[in-house]
Length: 285
Length: 326
Image 1 (tube, each protein chain N blue to C red):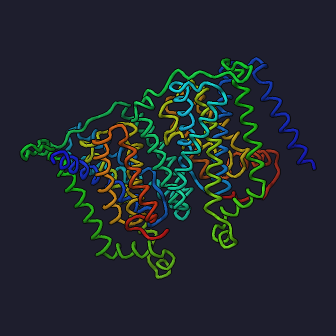
Image 2: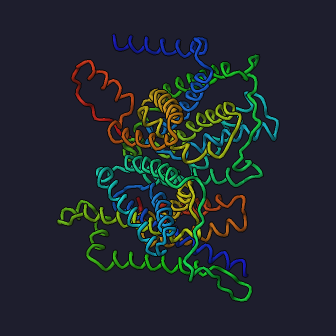
Image 3: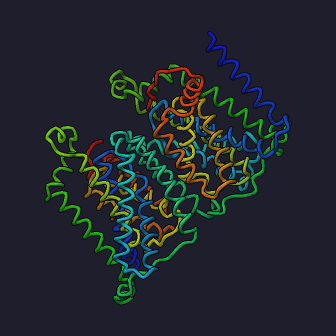
């Protein structure tokens, strides 16, 4: 029993980190048909920037936010300079984000070197909770809480604000939305920026769980993509459900079949593709 | 007529140069880089069959390539499959089986969905190679693969192996050029451009895509086997997403939908990354920037870009042909 609870909690914590990456991925894809491969590079860049700020004495949360703001600025720069021209052309935009990934990865390696950095959570959350024989880091709960809070903000924005209405309309029928006089381009910028911000801010937040090392982005990419496949492309609810499913499958896979752990995420992906190719919450593509 | 003759002259001259090169006193290192070029070109051509003629942007080409490489390595070190034909067949079968499995999953989606799924599939296979230490050797990979003799020829020298890879390249080029010009190839193009219309005409679109994927995997697997023998080592890097990216860069740089263009793409990428890596440690960054520029400004690849620049140099004005996109 303890084994299951322990891994379930770990899986949920990891899954809620995945949500920070996958929510941007799925929204950006749903709205502008851009597969942003650099999303996990934003996460890694955010982690490194945050880490550098923390070692300079910054507050953990401020540093994390600063990391997010830097990646947001970077994402906006790349989007407005190159990507916005290719929003209806998934292949070209994918290739551009791939090029961006190469550049970012090598830039990160140049600036921060190849050594892995472990990141410690802020002191008040550094301890563990103990229930009987069950011991787990408090920080897991903090990460789950923050991710759910961000998810709630995203949901409320999408469902309850004018901006959200415009975004949902543009996802459904971009041309008609433009025809009604909505500035869809502005929504594009906002969504791309939000995606980059959340991924970048997740970097330091997730740091105590994933740590930071070159190649981490490459390891997170398939997990984030699996989330989007399972949840359904373009669906925020799907991203949340998919994140938790992939997080749990990944945690139990690691614990039960350590040698095949990566392979276990193939199972939900294959099942979804076999029975519901559009994903749990996705619409037919 | 004259254009056709120019083509024939170019091909004959190129083939003669490729055949004579190892005897012209070029450094062995150069020969070795060229050998690598032939191998990467085979893999890139197999990818171009999918991207350029079926419209399937397969990000798991490195997985097919790498599975071929691992199969020959595991076969040689565990099961004593040390012959040339044995190793080659072993690698091909492994690649085809992997592709058959991938196709069942990935071809349920189209377009961007296919891309996303193949990215995930490739990384999953990488994860297996990286973590399934008892089979794959994990991060250390598998060493001690020796090049088997081909009939009476000993391939342990770089020059001998150069000719094997050159022959494999020429054969692949000939087969794939024939395939894409055959009636089957025409149907593939139809499936790429208007899948719905082809479906309405009674073609089994899924089957054409699936068969093209399997055909492509045969060559990707072959390239993987040749690469394993070339390096005499196999590691997770060979089937990483980075490797898939390299194939994709080679394919796009050469020119999508040409098959032969991939040779030029491979030449440029292999020699450029080698040159750059001797000049600067940040060669990946430089390569990334070059690649970015190519995608933005020359989506037709070198095959379109070079003749255009050449004509411009000679002061000819040419109509700008919009690059064909898959």
